[in-house]
Length: 278
Image: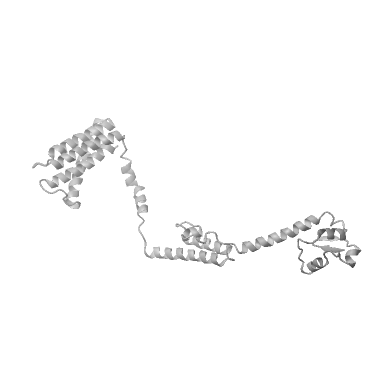
């Protein structure tokens, strides 16, 4: 009995005494190294080996040989795999992580990619370069912290005080916004164009009446219109005076410039109150 690639068979005398003249050297040279080439004459094997285990399995020999060669080719390709993001400039995108990733996540991504593409030097260099850039940037950011304006604005908007103030306002219809805007804009223009020695007393009185009217038109309540209008007028005038004295320098020069500028600030605050206050 003889064993051939896991198959057993009984050789005939012709095989033992003298190989077939068709492929004697090819067959003999293939046995010492254990390499079965696909171009072996399988018909010759079938004629010489008459064991029942070999009959009908010549195709299996050919298939097994081909699979072995394909598998060895796959292993060779996998060991020399090229990093697909080798030319990506952004180091975070090259490693496949977000900019908010922690140092542990950065190190884990680097180790995984190095292990996977260890057979290709250019890929390893690209991975290491991206990792070094990210680490250096993290180190620089820790030494020179930056103020994240978007984050600060988001935190302010989510605070309880701001949420409570925003809940006190609502957006009316576009028609109503245009109507109230025109009314207070006309008052502002009249205050600038026709200043008097007494100050813009008449325009300020008209602005208070307009505030009562617009609040009542939205809320349909006389009591709330009076309370909201009076409170908004007092708050607007005090705030305008404070801003003019302590914060904002005089913008309008000349006669009653201080009162005119304070009145303009008051008109803006009254317009917001009469239009958006809920």
